[in-house]
Length: 317
Image (cartoon, rainbow, N blue to C red; front, top):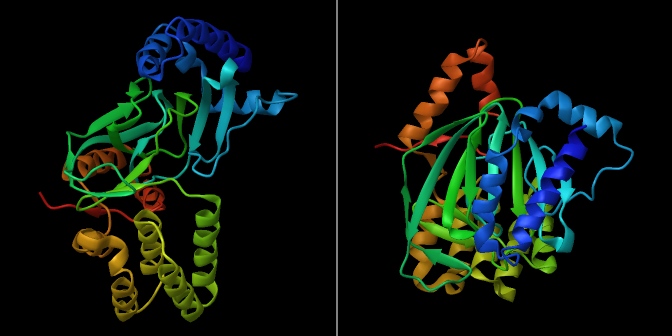
């Protein structure tokens, strides 16, 4: 049974990890080698996954945090000492997010296909909640079933991974937390700390709710948040969701001016980023286009892809 096989795999990996003193810097290589030496990827299909979930008397403790990936994520194994866990991610949306990770490990595509791009981020800013720099994409990659990608925690591994099939299933072997914060990245060149306190998360959730019900009240609420003082990263998040939902450009200009003191010298880069969508690099867009053309139902699949977290725009070369 799938869960039994994953447990045997996880237990063996934990023993190997113990020999490295549970050092997260060693974990990507260990996870990569472990996946390469097993047939676990070929065993994990939509059918075996649904059977395992349907037949389980009790699943392993599920890891569904506020930034959990997948539609849904399904935890298959939890290692002792809160050292790492293994999850299958069932994807039906194509997220456009560029991000790094607060954990280390590896992921593999087990069903479907992904269009994948890795980025460098160059900045002279000291580490902080919001950094200005330059995003530099590396050549895009096609990830088909069986391809494994190591994950290094922090800014050493920045990527965007578009899940092209409905569903796309990936398996992720990852540490719980490497003691660092995760960042999202925004063109033309911002790195945004994704950590939110419980209070910030609730402030953000209320703003989103108010924007769907009463735009004028939401605008006043955002002014109150700005006047009360916010971290630059929290301010950017709130301004971004405000911009995506308000109807008047003048509203943004007014709120941006009120927030100027929160960003200081970073204000020009913040304004530039807020006024543009996340473009897709031409080579990544070409991988998406090729995949769509290869589908038997190409027209329907193109509609499916555009049902993503953010409608893609294409960056000019």
